[in-house]
Length: 255
Image 1 (cartoon, rainbow, N blue to C red):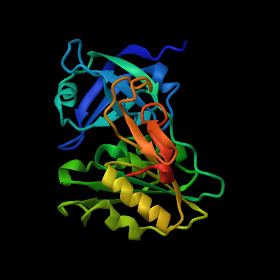
Image 2: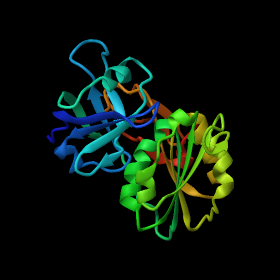
Image 3: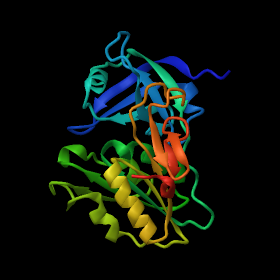
């Protein structure tokens, strides 16, 4: 059986904007297997608190594995205190990745809310120079927005909104939908973020007869599809986000 679990050294763990951190791991076995949309499951520390591992989308898999995260609970706050050289117990890569855009697609629109931007960076690494790439990003405040330079280096047109108007357009990311020229034959959507945001993306896609995929975020225990704790309802019945997803056909999701 292929080994999924191992211990890896932290290369760096740095704050990239007031709210987000980037963790870099020396994990060559994951780099060699990871695909956009997959995630890793990290045991934060050797104790019963926190008891469960924490899932993190892979944001880059080049020389090292990178994740983006926001310290919001016990696990992620503990992770933010980890130092260079420390070791982390990691399960991965796991999950069903994004599919490549169908034949005939020329424009790929990536729509993200908050830390949901993470898997879309990895995706842009794969799709760069092959498609016209657009990123629509929504954050709560200026503190939730980083420089997006990696997306720009990949040729992405980056458009930003914030709830309070501190950066970009004031309002939800849906305010940016009018900035793109959707075509049902040549445009494909990828999205990840809070469920209300993804619901608005789904509605927009249906209104313009666009195809797409959504990467779902759920609390996970096993990350292998065994405990069923991350099950969500889809048009094809209940599915586990960790095993059947995180990437699903956008039209199949029920919000």
